[in-house]
Length: 237
Ligand code: MN
Image 1 (cartoon, rainbow, N blue to C red):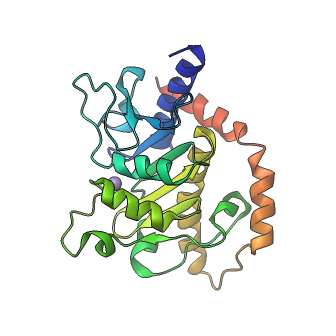
Image 2: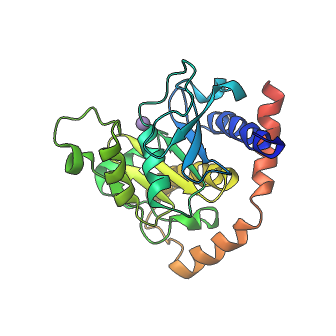
Image 3: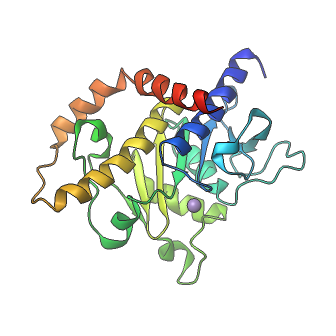
């Protein structure tokens, strides 16, 4: 790995800590990034709590979900979410999987998660909801623990930026670590705000044009929240 790659690993470590501090992951959940030089590989921590991840914990995987050089490190069971999304989506450079509390109700009720504010325009166009019973039958443990379930999930995700997993959590994808962290944070916030707003009355959501415009406007400012969140975790170290 060259210096540039070490910078990417530092960013991946920082992203793990940010996602914990922003309430997206807890003891569970993970974030990966596609390998910068090998598009058929990706980087993901060994199986530990994201807030405790350090550079030595970052493992390299191929698109079958096999570790390239495990050195005794145990991988996450659900790494097939990452491997099969990277295989299916050439545009995706980073993936977050999480179980944050506000997204769960949307996956189990059929309520549609929709962009309530300009920070979450990426939710426009419909948020797919993965039903594991369709691919895994009625008696799974709800985890994407095989490549076959990963393929089924990636098919449900389609071209979307964000997908729910019924009775489990969600997945955000992006073209960078910064963008995927942004999406995971604001999807959770959108879910919380949408449930709050519903108590007050009918919600006037962003329309598709507003969502697309807002998303483009925010896209050029991905560094701003990243630097803020990064500073917050740096203080805690
Ligand atoms: Mn999970």
